Image (tube, rainbow, N blue to C red; front, side, top):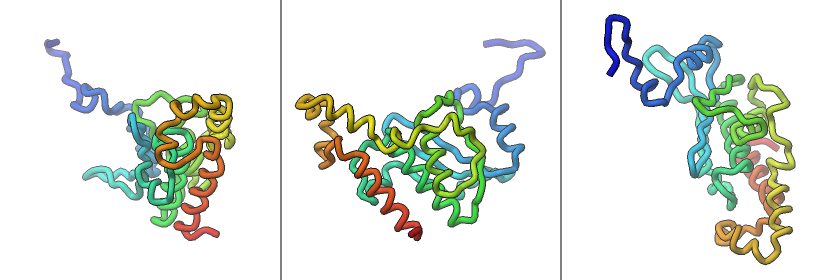
Length: 194
């Protein structure tokens, strides 16, 4: 353990590798709610969080587990589900009166066209104002899962092994783009959009 007159013990969350306080301070100085996006090994979690001196307050949240309520049979951590979670969060945030937010990716390194930015695109399409460059957002064809459907067609019979989880849930991988559109429409109906 380091010691001496100039040694300073780091904050607990910093030493655990959970929080970058410099980055957090910059986000808080914007005086806007944060669109917090976290990716786990199994799920996509998105929240609109506002700072209060006594502690952060979650204004709206969405989780990829919730997509099953709308009939989603695809994966819960892929690009498609990330977009749907972002869209769902955007609609919930607008219902709570939140119109704009800044993106908080935590310690995750931003990847152009990745799942985090798919969630951001979902928020933008829902009507939430989020400052982000168009260059980092994934293409709609990838968000709909057209590349997955094409890959499943190329595999032929081997797709039964590769897409066993999809098939177990009753989803043909070639139908993923159409299924995505159906679920997105159900989310729109639940939010009251026509």
